[in-house]
Image (tube, rainbow, N blue to C red; front, side, top):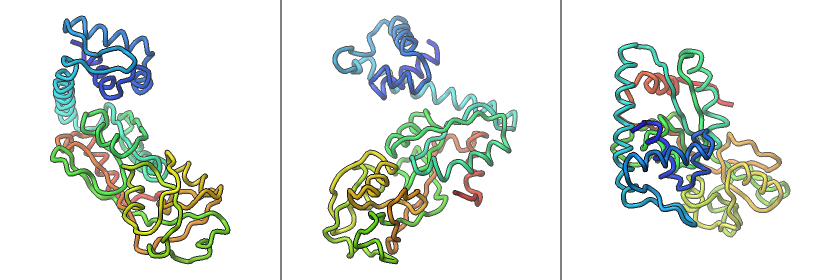
Length: 284
């Protein structure tokens, strides 16, 4: 049983889509199909029901857990070898939210790359839940998110800093001339929001008064829609405002959190990243 087949199976099992799995793995779709077929032939069982929607069979459901365990053991073996060499090397996959990919991660990447050039870095963008799941399943080594990390004994986390939040409003909006906005000022104000599950949507939902006028899929799209006059929004102060007017939201801030698998924290490449990210770095 080839490890690459198990890795491919695990991504297909998570995405339930051969096209998305191929894009994520940087394979041709035909290669993904061939690998799954080879794994099914070796095991003598169908792993997926192929119909209008791809679904795991009962055998596929059982294999997911074993694939996770096998690939985690492989990572532990690599870490043990790295420990003997002493110097970080190999591959390190990092995930981050859209905003953090643009503002927090680049200086960390730069500092890490300068010190440990033998490590091949990969940065992937995703939603918060998607990032946590990828770390749990060993598809990413570390992720950067806003807010507190999930309460999961398999994961460890550290707070790197905090980012103040601002209310962004269209030019000419009644709130645009304020030097500061308090939650009580937002009663009856229409907001654009990211989908449920996003940290900024949760912050908005905790404020009594504003209502969600429309949902948008990303922070970048939200900012552009606010600038176009469609409503207001809540974003970190580090986000570019692109024509919208930012006004500080009194007392509001969010943590920047780094999360990793607890069992990996002594792996040289991961330990080096944790140490690098914990240092004072200039974000822009």
